[in-house]
Amino acid sequence: MYSEILLPTDGGPASEAAIDHAVELAAETDARLHGLYVLDTTAYPALDAGREAVLGALKEEGREALEGVTDAAEDAGVAVVSELISETPHRGIIEYATDNDIDLIVMGTHGRTGLDRYLLGSVTERIVRTSEIPVLTVRAPEDDT
Image (cartoon, rainbow, N blue to C red; front, side, top):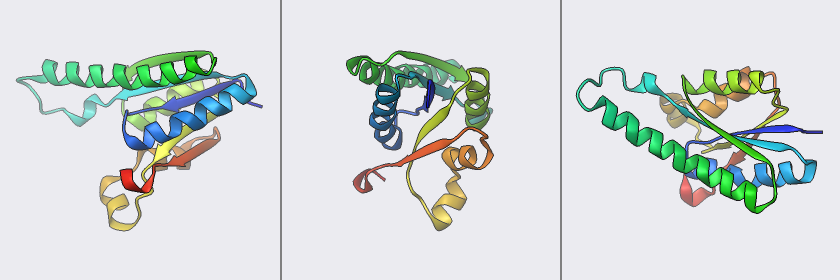
């Protein structure tokens, strides 16, 4: 059913909640898991002084998030690849999924509603609305939202 599963991660609680589901699905379907961290450089356009330090810290955060995905997949005997890219998150995820023949995208969500969702937006929500590829959302535990 699935041969390529994408797990975008930002290292947060919602993404952490999605790891187990993605790894279990990949194991059950003998699929390869793709861990993806999208470094959103557009979120920091005004940085001049200290830009490299901030970007370096964000890249390290991304590497650590991807390491968590890779470790979980390898512990379960699941084939895994990971990539850190720079792009607007929703665009980067859709482009990666399309370019890599992804069959399913597994993403964490905070389950925000109302004003919080309106003000903060949601990468997961944008993916759900725009992706032609099926998307499985995994809600973060209540105490982590």
